[in-house]
Image 1: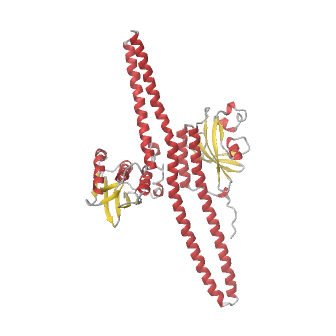
Image 2: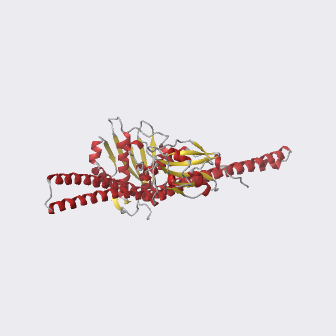
Image 3: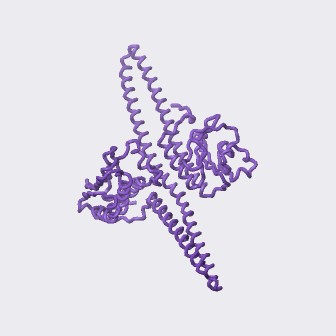
Length: 469
């Protein structure tokens, strides 16, 4: 069976994939601290702003078109299929007249985006209004996201390729059916039996191919989702340099001020005004150190949880009801403030040989989600945690009577960085951490059942004793 080339120019990017790109594009603009992060798509004779970061001062509108052959930064990236870094176009005769300068964008860092068949999709780039040489960290972050986008493009391409092959297979089988039918019309009884066999064979082949495609896509989605988070965490962890640098600056400034006061005291020039200034400067330095130390701690905690280090919490034998009780005791003040009514139904004798720390982590994330998202405007706030042993598997259930989850977003709630509270500073990592811990460490599965207004129910199937690592 021959196959024709896939027309990549006509392939579309589905809304779920585009939304994932948008979320990480916004994150890149924030990390690199630039007004614009873009994904461009070539559509001759123009190039289109496919996605644009939602960052302050970004002059580029989504779906905006610009003509090619006008000296744009992105044209060079697509033509060379390599990285382009322009720290200051105003100081570079090769770039001082490019069209983006009219928008005030004088620095540029961009990489090409290429389909699996080597056709160019477009570019991914960041732009700044000031001179910017972009650090090695910034380049690595952009390269990692480029790899994520190109893997997604590979999935889109492969789906189109398989659909094209299936269509060709159906056409060939249909042609055979028509040929056999013509023989039947001519009066050959044997053709009737062959036609029936051919039809049966066609149905079997189509069913088998459909099942194979579905299984392959499910595996790709799960594996790629976890791999994406791991790669992003590796790059984002370098952002700890900012709060740590601020802490060092605060400590250094305080030390310099103390040295100056010590010299004044030794020279008998110390005044009350100098002491008051020292106290003010000291308080400010301590505030800087405390604020940035807290920020660094939050970053470390969040990104460690995404990676789910399997060696971080030890495996041991434990009673599940004791683990749940210990967690609820630790979260007691928060649960009381949230006015939650808890119902716990875990058999006292249910013993597991697993990772109690990760089970506590999963339940803590779900309780946090309920307190933040589930009960807005509701006085009756109830959460139920129950468990049942079914052979060598524990069915652990967490459910609340909150607002429920919109069916339109349920397929995405476990995606890294997906959140409905972007404006409130939410990271969108909670349920991604839950899924990763359940699958990677506890070797189990989770199912979500929810209807608007009827709460949310999470059902976990966890082995009593998961396989050794």
